Length: 405
Image 1 (cartoon, rainbow, N blue to C red):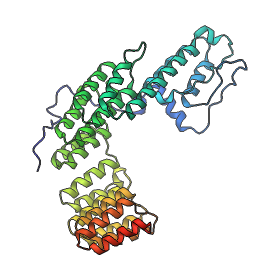
Image 2: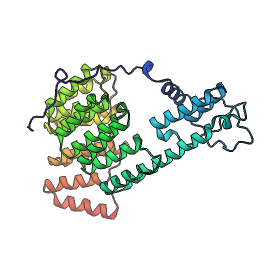
Image 3: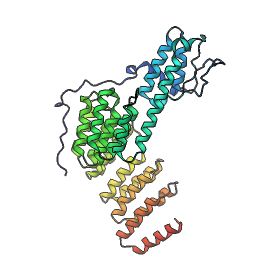
Image 4: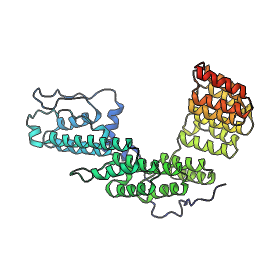
């Protein structure tokens, strides 16, 4: 059992904000308008652009529809609203700001009077530069060189990093284990951005700490989210619970789950899968099965990942009968595991030397269109070697070389 972690209870935490209710009514007008347009399949009718326009329409997006409508509603002041809305969209979702249609209006002097086009083009140019910086950071293999480039562009006149570039830099540093630099970057983000938008950044830091085995640091990041006015959602809870389960901190993972429920946050399918995995690793497959059967009542549909987690639990407990019965039930319900999920399942069997059972499961899924890949055969070969069936392992390897499998 691993050493204990410092996981503060909700009763002892200080500086916690009241729980926020994320209802549709609390969303801004912009978010509601954009969401409704994204769901709608009927495009909004727009006036054709003037024939003399210097800015031909490249393509309509929800962003462009909103801006055009703002300018057509009223010519006395709405273009300023359109520009403000454009900037708000850009700050929240830079990828949405890619093309700007002509601002249709009965007034031909609208652009000259308000300078909307010129201002909008400046925002678009900045957006393209942000995406370029983010791409350079992602493709730079050396995280410290990426950080040097990231800091150098801040010295350019008028350039200011946004959520996209900051997030890429934090992920790059965290992935390569440069945690001191990563924490410094997160602190800089807190000073320059709305902390309520930084959940994805915190979640990335939690996962990268977990990958490197720094579990207490991952917990610390999670605990600080509330303090810095960033309300954790189910994604953040799932991230920290998964790390705790992977490193066998089962009690702490359950406490995190109970805190999530106390706050009124509903579990999703990933939450159930993590908890199922936790029960199986505690050698309690029947408890995992009960949780699996309870998923529809909690508003979550079954999936192959959850099924295979329970099946693996039964195989690990040397209960092949119930495991195979559950496997057949999964296929009967139409849930086919992908290669990654299936390979994890047969790895459990081959690790214990049960190659024949692995072949039986493979034949079942192969008939339904799931094809084995090189990792699948590698698992089989290792299982045959563990079983002492070296001739069969060599035969399978030769068949792979000849392309017969």
